[in-house]
Amino acid sequence: MAQNEAIKLALPKTLGDYLNANKASFLSVIPRHVDGERMLRVALSCVSRSEKLQSCTLPSVLRSVMQSSILGLELDVNGEAYLVPFKGQAQLIVGYKGMIKLARQSKEIESVHSGFVIEGDEFDFDDGTEAYVRHKKRLRTAGDLQALYNKQEDPSHQAIAWYAAARMRGARYPQVKVLDQYDVEKIHRMSKSANNGPWVQHYDEMGVKTAIRAAAKTWPLSSNLSRVLAAEERTEREGTVGTDDLFPEMKGLIDAGAIEAEGGTVEKPKSGVDTLEQKLNAGKQREPGEEG
Image (cartoon, rainbow, N blue to C red; front, side, top):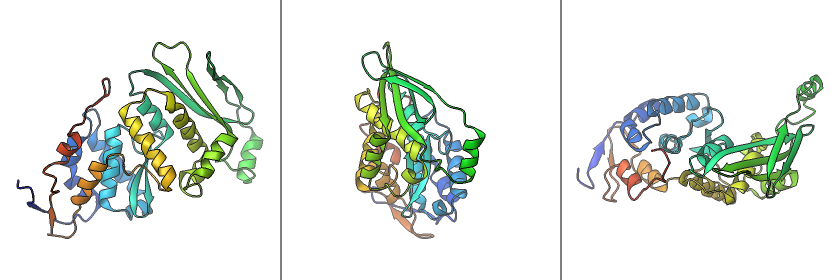
């Protein structure tokens, strides 16, 4: 096909039509072990449950689903990743469990454990040369439940500490990072999105993500986790939501392929690369041990 040849396509009436029309490109770029058909079905389910996501642009939904699939993270399953609306665009947010999954893609990391501590839990740690974390949760009482019903406590601001512990292969002791309320609140207040988004709705989970990000500064990172952490830092600085620029080359191609009018034409990108697969794979090398 000529470099500037136009593709004649009809305007999709629904997100399902749009995703189906772009299914071949989607399946061509995601890792082979990812069930692309299932990811598309899950994406449709996520959008169907949110009126705000239904108002987002179709290319932004496809882009976010592609990013999640390339990372190997499940949307809205087990807290790995989420689709979130932001200024008319669907954005991918990687949860702390997704970060742990990405960390395990590194050949050098054997395991990662993280969590948050509620007042009354049994908790002890050492982050020195013989590091360890011991955490035994306190079972909640009927009084705790009644206080929650009476709105006497905010369930999103209960933790007093957040931690992440990673054990390297062959290591006797894990690498431990523990943050207290001062540490997490300092990061929270520095964020330009402190008063909206995940910090408001999921404070303790964001605290765990903060602990993982702090701990990961000394970890041998997989390429995917490196991308996510860099995007998270830009998000905090700029006050945006999600990880829109995980794969910048993807954003340009999907936006260029957005269908503008029924029966209209869409110009191919003038980069000389005819397919999204070629563009994403150009110069790309996976780390040894990473699935693809």
